[in-house]
Length: 271
Ligand SMILES: [Zn+2]
Image (tube, rainbow, N blue to C red):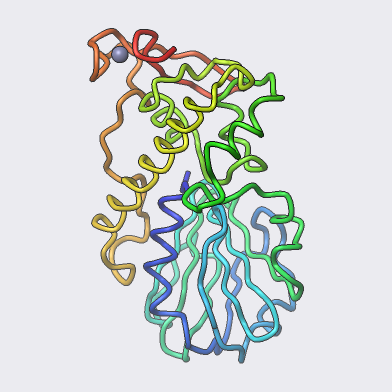
């Protein structure tokens, strides 16, 4: 599943090909994505200029003349820039044609991705209204996390994966950040002290920054390749390493299920 670092890298990769250019058409080959794409969407966006391409959580936002096109990559989606006459693959569901020559092409075999249009203020849109701060912004601090954690009885891993608390911390990054901070994922959120919140905030930011950096080197060019970026190559300390030696202490990495997700940790290093 594309996580925040993959979406951030996609954002940086496509922006130079989109910003300042005009949408001259839109082809929707498959309307049934996570939500149906409105039939009149091509008409709404054609002729409009793309002013900015930004990311909020795992959503990409294309600001146009009269509204915002919201894109989500779902479980298996990817975006790339190709020549508009490049034959479409069976999972290439949407083309946003830029300046008549090139297009931003959405490829999504599992069709959990989304293309949503809003004419209103994007911050007030139902997808964004309740979202917590960006993990790499100055709003995500130890004070903030401690305040949100101290009345919660859920475990800390569930808390940091809740987009209403902080956006974009998926399963892999939650496991890795908790390992780096020395915090056991099953610890009750309200038991986390302020200094440990500070360590966790730094660990989340570090693990995401490293992944974005890895993505920047893996995906230099969004205009070639097979359009299926996959996961960035990053050294993982605990995720998917059940039974293997902890990189820090050598004890075997454990796996437990928390809220239907596999959770990996070292019982020796994480308390
Ligand atoms: Zn260990």
